[in-house]
Amino acid sequence: MENRAETLAAIVRLAEEAGALILEIYNTDFDVEKKGDGSPVTVADERAEAHIMAGLRAMTPDIPAVGEEESSQGITAEVGSGPFWLVDPLDGTKEFIAKRDEFTVNIGLIEDGRATMGVVHVPAKAVTYAGDTKSGATKREGGNPAKPISARAMPDKGAVVTASRSHGDQKRIQDLMESLSSDRMTITGSSIKFCLIAEGEADIYPRYGHTREWDTAAAHAVLSAAGGSVRTLSGDDMCYGKEHLLNPEFIARGRDS
Image (cartoon, rainbow, N blue to C red; front, top):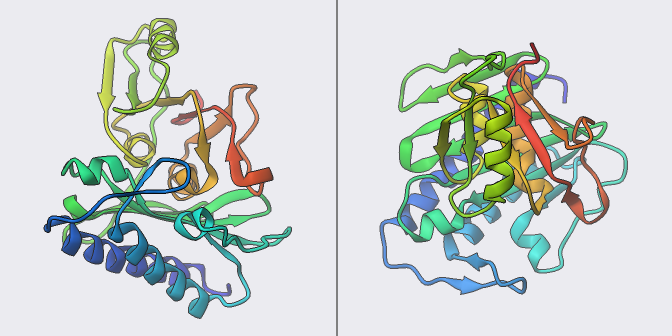
């Protein structure tokens, strides 16, 4: 990966092309099926992932790529100790099914166990977040040029908490808000929560419960590139390449004070 800027631009294109495929289906009466774990899946998930995986394998044939939909079918690349891609082609499938615009396309690069490069594309809003921990993070809206974004430091009072509409332990979230003297919460779906912190629109996202690495890698990279962090409840930086690609509970937040 000699030119990181070119690689990032290429995965932005892949994510946006996948987003266009998703929107074609979003505007139809599509069917919803169930995967083995009971979670919903649509043809949009499958077509978007197929497009992204083909693109990554052509662009970086020596870097393994792991996708959510392939993994659900028992197809998982051996990642070893080297770099690898993590792909969630349609994060927020429940939002997609409900015709809410809070679903995203996610492509993240893992290097030395860290999320270092990522793209989060929001098809229904024509918004793309991109980040490389070596060069920073940006946000592009519509056809406008991408602009740099930066996470902010946690305020002493009035922190904005962002949380999921369909996941989370509400009692623990409320306890956290009380500890932060916060009465402001933004509810949104998918990996957008990380991106709100990355652009300084929110301060903290607690995730109490189950996630997989492909759910977080791309947005984690964007947030890290914007100066924020994702840490386990014990305070360790969240790493990747774990057994079963299973994440512990974590806290995503802006800059340390």
